[in-house]
Picture 1 (cartoon, rainbow, N blue to C red):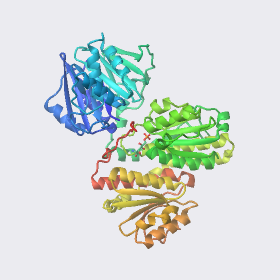
Picture 2: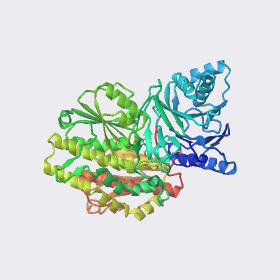
Picture 3: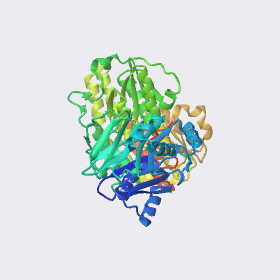
Picture 4: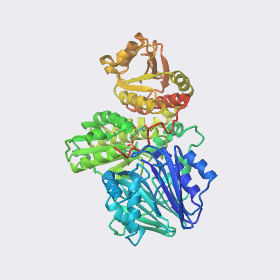
Length: 609
Ligand code: AGP
């Protein structure tokens, strides 16, 4: 977690750094800080709480200077406080860090024995002490950082600055992201591209075990052992405007509304109706391999896990490959059986989730083939995989994932059709029909978005609820789980998702007149049975909100609140029926006045265990 930005160049830098941090707040927002070098002195300003506090402070006391670094924090070691906020300073050295130093207790004890005095509870301060101590023995700042890193176990993306090194920043990376941006006589580094996109589109993604010396005139990238690295400079094609709110009240609302475009982008150039097929570029395996796959294992966390649950239905039904779905944190907690003919599919919006990353290592050790489904290009997960099916959703800033979820679904659906064709479990005509249905999704999503006023009315009532149940069957069961997760994440209302058939086995005991039950019930094979569940809830006084298809007559006589979704082929219903649930959660949270884009205790990217 945490966001880092640094700058060295010809411009006053504190505005540039603060602007960058504002685009990284999704990575953590419990405290923030900045350090700027000016006339041989480094000034540091740190503040507990959101970035706005630091902005006010800098307005009152600006920090001049043309080289500096900033950090927005999500606490791991040490509570959120000004003292624990980064940058950490020891002597002439300041450090910002994203990651976890695993051997921090031993190192801290050792440093304290040698007389070091600590001013924070963080693991990061250890690094500042190590660099400061080593600097007296080493010729260069880079060497001092290198020697210090050799003593550290764990994950890090760091920036180090020294008062006596007026034109250089040292950056290094291991298991936490860091990208270098190259401008005209100015250089940047940051945890993520949007932080620097306003200033440059030319970037270099650092790999694990690399460090760089960054100065106004350029970058020297090496491995930790000093071997020179020549890394390709990539040109980013999306603009920083795409990462902003575009008039919506929150990023989450903007991202919900972007979904028709996002799905069109994810499908663009990949689906061929004439050829009844899906382009396989980047998938990392050929047709013969596709036919050899014995089992698929989908691994993910949170919302991406719910996408995986939907994927299982499609992969088993359309491609007829036995498919298992694993929570990444549980997969790595046991000794899973892995076969070289397994296709392991990690799904991760951020491409950085630590548990998912660790699960990949286990699957790789078992010689399985890895195909990632990820949104963030060149992030850790695609880099560790044999191939990647990118979801082209653009940056997702709201902590609650919405557009990336539906983009993941679109990618999984395409993959299922692709494998179905290669394995001859789908005829050409059936594949064409499935793909035509998929191409209708953007139009159908637009129809759902027109229901927003109606959803808002229902949300106003729900905002007073203490609990909610979400029910679904078949393909709608993972959607019920996702609806419950969205509601609890952003509105803090206690919500549970259940397979409707499980209701009688326990949750029915919760039903009374105070319980809202949201039932996902599109026109499909399960409709009759789920109407039965709705009647059971109504009979016990529960309030039901049904997500129902336009032409549904099965539930017509039931007196419940309805959100109408357009009729669609059953296979694509998850991509449609999740939208009302996203909007419902959003408006409930907005009525309650919670911090929708940055809900308490959460962070966008979970790079800790
Ligand atoms: C989604 O709304 C959540 N914030 C969270 O569950 C998220 O889906 C999970 O942390 C996985 O993230 P990833 O897709 O980036 O791996």
